Image (cartoon, rainbow, N blue to C red; front, side, top):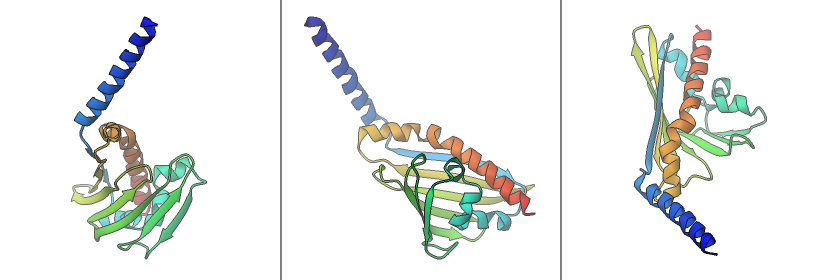
Length: 177
C-alpha cells in the first residue's frame, strides 16, 4: 500500500510539473521557411492567391487524395475561402484576408481543435536569379498550458510541410516559364 501511495504521489508530481512547465512555455509561435524560385513573382503569385491552385503544390492534398474541399468567394480575391475535411489531415478553413498583387498574401487559418485562428503570410521578394518566397504562419494558442506545448512544437510539426510545399511551388512555378 505504501508503494502505491508513493507511485501516485510521483505520478501526480510529474503531471503537476508538466502543467507548470506548460504555463512557462510561450503561447505565441511563428513558423517560417523560404525558397528562391527562378521565376518572376507574377508567375508565382497566381499559384498562391487562388486557393484552388494549392492542390497543385500543397503537401496535404497529396497525402489525402480523398480530402473533401469546398471553395467560396471570388477566386484569387479577398474573402476567397477554402474549407476541407480529411480523416488523415484534419479539418480546417482558410480565408484570404489581404494581398498586394505579386508581392504579398495574408490569410487566416483555423482548425476546430485550436482555440484561435493563426495568420499565414507569403512574401515575394525580387532577388538576383528570381524571387524569394517567404512563407510564415504565426499565432497565439491562448492560456491553456497544454496548448503551449503545441506552440512550442509548431515549427517541428509544420515546418517540414512548408519546406515540401515550397519545393512543390518551385517546381510548379518554374514549369510554366
